[in-house]
Amino acid sequence: MIEITSSNIMLVVAVMLMMSVFVGKAGSRFGMPALLLFLGVGMVAGVDGFGLHFDSAASAQFVGMIALSIILFTGGLETRFSDIRPVLFPGITLATVGVLLTTGLTGTFIYYVFHWLVPEYSFGWAESMLIAAIMSSTDSASVFSIFDSAKLGLKQKLRPTLELESGSNDPTGLAHEI
Picture 1 (cartoon, rainbow, N blue to C red):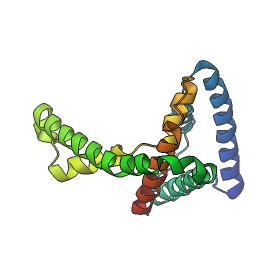
Picture 2: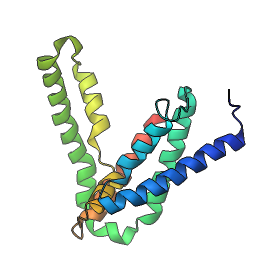
Picture 3: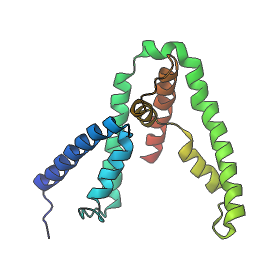
């Protein structure tokens, strides 16, 4: 059994970061989203791959919250207010009305599809809306990653609008997790 020490943890983190950089560089050449490749690296490092066992739910939540906080912090530092000022109204509308509409439509879809296809595993309205609310807000990092990997340019006002929408939704979701 391998002893868990701070140096072993640092070694594993360093190896995984190195693998992520190599996979990310290789993926950008072939037009694959980096997020998909990072998921693959995580799966390879897991129990069925290299055999890293991580069975502490509290530790996993702590690591996830730290990672999300760093992502949100760096996203906030990279967003300039002068860029989002012209799109305040559309961005706030998308972050509120758009998310509410998406949640309502997706929750209704989940409710009826599960009642129709697998009635024994169907969800109630509350559960359907909760699942829909989790899926409803966009994450600008993933959206931009996919657009950049596909070499698709965004219109002038679309990028700041998505940044504003994501920047107002993601911290709220993170605060509810804590």
